[in-house]
Amino acid sequence: MTTAHGKVFASGLALLLTAAASAVGAGPASAAGSTVQLPVLASQLDADADCAAGSDRRATDVPWEQVSLQLSRTWPFASGTGVTVGVVDTGVSSSAPALKGRVTAVGDAGTDCVGHGTFVAGLIGAAVEDGVRFAGVAQQARILAVRGSDARGKVTADQVADGIRAAVDGGAEVVTVSAALGGDTAALRSAVALAAKKDVLVVAAAVPDAPSTATSATDSPPARDYYPAADDGVLSVLDVDVSGKRPTGAYTTSSAAISAPGDGVVGIGPKKAGHYIGSGASLAAGFVAGAAALVRSVHPDLTAAQTATLLRTSAYPADVPRLDPYAAVTSVLTGTVAAPARGDAGTPVHLPADKAAGPLRRALWPASAGLAVIIAVVWLGLILPRGRRLGWRPSTRPEGTAGPEGAESPVPVGTGAQGTSES
Image 1 (cartoon, one colour):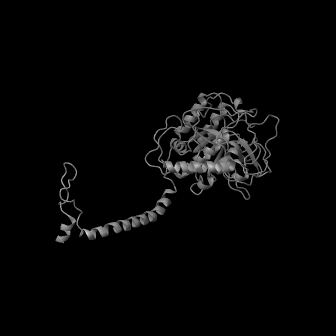
Image 2 (cartoon, rainbow, N blue to C red):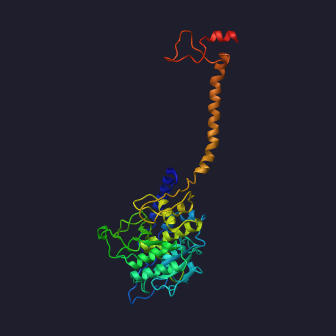
Image 3 (tube, helix red, strand yellow):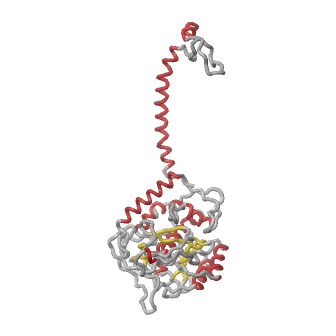
């Protein structure tokens, strides 16, 4: 694993960056890092509500979540090239400018009335546009749009299960599922098992998005499992805010494997080049799916389960480990990494040493050499005069002086004067 010093340093750096970003992520409808007021994303529409028209407002500053995840450090090492991420949601608009040319749709999933699926897809792979510093985690990854709900965003277990199967059959290597259902079904378990069999990593929201009526932490429902996140082999994701804490009134669970930004994050809409702001574990799952795409692009020999293990073991230490794409992507793997996405930790992943260790060691070599020269000069300054006085013979004890009890003297007993007279 990374050295303890390196991990502590990285965690401290992340906290400093996060603290700096916290001053600019004020309101739930404000773009983090900007004074621009963005429209709030909906995850479901009423039957008589108009489809999302897209946003005319653009977030021009770096969102806090990109700072927290250190994406600018990660992108020189990986971009998600060659990896397809399936988005099981409300659909993904193939006309979204930031995803242009990289969306393939199953059925009618290339349209997105709600906009939620497009938002998640943007967190995964939106490209940088002129005048905008927001970008997805894996900007070269391809998106496979799969409908996991009806056109208005209403979800059933069968729709989600069918969506997972369609994403697997469509060639996705990573699949993110936004829905978090209160009950498990045979169809969900079967779909997850198919993904595991085909070596596809399923990433899912560990809990439903926070209820809009919550006003305090006491409004949080009791902790419980939600599905498919709680199924074996699924990497379950919790959402955290800019301070690394759960949002007010959020649903809770004890089975989450990893956490990621998900409260007040910036994303794209299904139309136009503007941005929305949204919250929820479904969005956090998008960030983790993007990181999984980065890992699978630079470590193509890793299995889905090994990818999940790497993401967890390289995460920042916390009650629920916090996603660290940089550490995951730059890991140097040795031996075999084999462990399920949930449950026992399994065989540990060997992560890289501190990136600063090499330059630091190189900088220390001249200093060490200089110190050695100083020590040698001092030593010679003490030894040479004494050696001349003794005629370069070892020092001896005066006659009759005993050595250690029971030990023989290692040198002939004599006096310095005798030694000198013989020379």
